[in-house]
Length: 304
Image 1 (cartoon, rainbow, N blue to C red):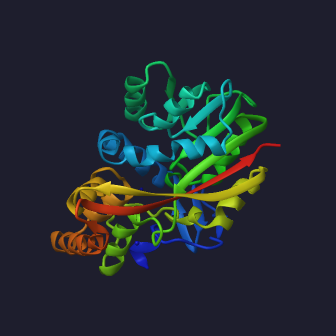
Image 2 (image 1 turned 60 degrees about the vertical axis):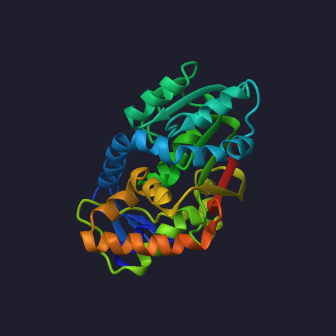
Image 3 (image 1 turned 135 degrees about the vertical axis):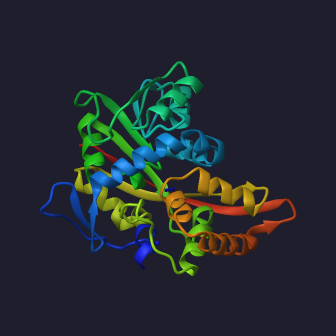
C-alpha cells in the first residue's frame, strides 16, 4: 500500500473530483491540487528502494489475488498477457502456469531484476505503464495487481492498456478495499487517524489511496477509457501473522507512502502511532497470532 490534512492521501472518496490545472503535471483531485510528476517520481524511487522489503513482507499477501485477477481477465492457454507493475512477478508466473504468453513490466528496475531472477522463463522489462513499449492491439489480456493506486494519473494507465489490447481483450485491475473491510491496511489507517499529525515535506500530495475501493469510481475509470461489460467485485480472505510487531514491520518496511508518512514523524509521534496500531491489532488476536481480514476490489472490462 502505499491522512483531514495528512489523511487526504488515505481516505476513501465517492465521486472524487478530478480536472487538469493550468500547469502541466498538476491535477485537481478531491479538491486538492496534486503534482502528479512529483508523485510518480516519489513512488518510483520508493519502489526501487523497497523492492526486496516488499518481496519479504507483502508479496505473499498480494499473490493470493493472482488467481481471481487472472480469472477476471479470462486468462487461458495461448492468451497474450501483459502484467502491469509486475513487482516480483507472481501474477506473471501464475499466468504463465495457465499457458499464457506473458510479458511483465515494472517502472522499478530492481523489481524487474527480482522477477527475472525468480522466473527466468518469462519476459520482464522496465516500462512506464503510461507509455508501454508494445504495439497497438498486441495483447489479449492486461492485468495490474495493486498498481492503479500507485500512479498519479490512473486514467492514462487505463487508456494505454486499451491501446495495447486487441478488440475483445480484457483489462483487470485490483486494489485494496475500504479500510473498514480490509483490515490489513485499515489497522494502520485507523491508528494514523487517532493521531494529530501532518505529512512530512518529503511526502508529496497524491491521489486518494482508497479512491477505487468505491465501485462507482472504479467503474467510471474503465468506462471512461471506452471499456464495456465493466464489472466490479471483491475477494476476501484472512491473513495470519504471528504478532502485531510483525505486521507493523511489514507495513512500514514493505510500503512507500505509509512508510514515508510514519517515519517522517517525530519520535514521540511515531511511538504514539505504534501504540495505537498495536492496540487496534489486538482485536484480531487468536491463540496462534493475528487473524486479519483482507478485502480486495477487482474491476474488469472488455475493449470493444
